[in-house]
Image (cartoon, rainbow, N blue to C red):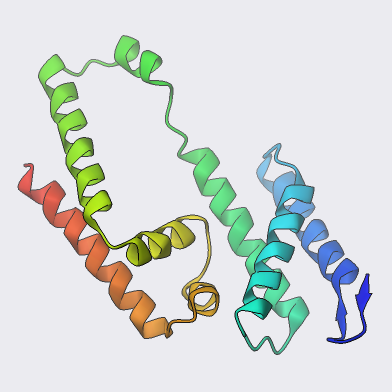
Length: 165
């Protein structure tokens, strides 16, 4: 898998990501497939290179992205919401608070649909576990611009949630 033109050893990078993901999942007790993480890291690596990112140390980049992706998976697994049925059966909330929560979610959803597509893309990339530097590389925007757009979007959502109280 050696790419002679660019000096990449994709198999070595894949093995690095695979080993790190296996260690992480073993340490945390998650049952996710480390192969999926390695594939995702290589896909992000390719996108970053395609986007013109200047990666000084390929192994360090792959290590950082693998760690970030594993932590993101861990957080997603930890924060998985129970099914709506079990929430409604086990919940001691009143019907009115459940309706209020649903209305709030609808308003947040509307706010998200009113946002520019470019801002939504940034939020999706961030929620997938990418760092600001990686997002800047993939989108071709300066890191400061990415941070500003995400901050404005976050503030819009927070103001909607505060106005609900």
